[in-house]
Image 1: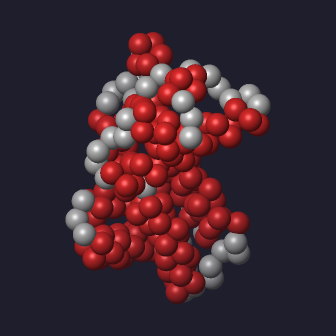
Image 2: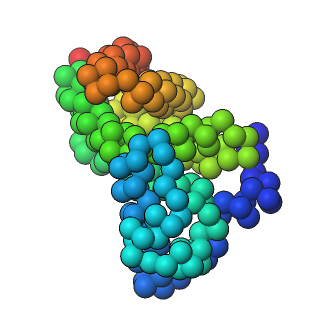
Length: 217
């Protein structure tokens, strides 16, 4: 059973003011873009609220109108990162289904190219993602997106093989998501060459896992 965020944690981390107008949305985008740039520049060092405000060209007070602290900013960045995966996976469902193993392998490769870019370009956010996973109060945030991703993987597999049972497709989706995410986190902590090699290994594992269920020549 999923655990909801407790009230204290939710108040501390949720954005203070939701942008209701286009101008407000642009201010929030400036704050988040500045925070992302700084996290990429500083690596594991967390940028201060002052530094984020300066990079965004805003006063600290303006930042605090939308976010109570720097942790809330990073959490919102993490949410944005997590929310980018469903769209990437959904692209594979919108194209014509592959008719043989080689075509499916090519589709998997396209998905890996797109998702790997999300990991590599946002490597500085991975400590935030891991913190969410390890915190019982924050984990529901990731669970929400995990469920979407698993469902999309299952739908993709059934797009390839409409006869695939829901229960099997869902189980395969869980393995695809968990193995792909954990292995990439390991790769990001190494060097780029190791990341690429682990990526190839995950692709091989995926293909070995799902191919028997797809009824491809």
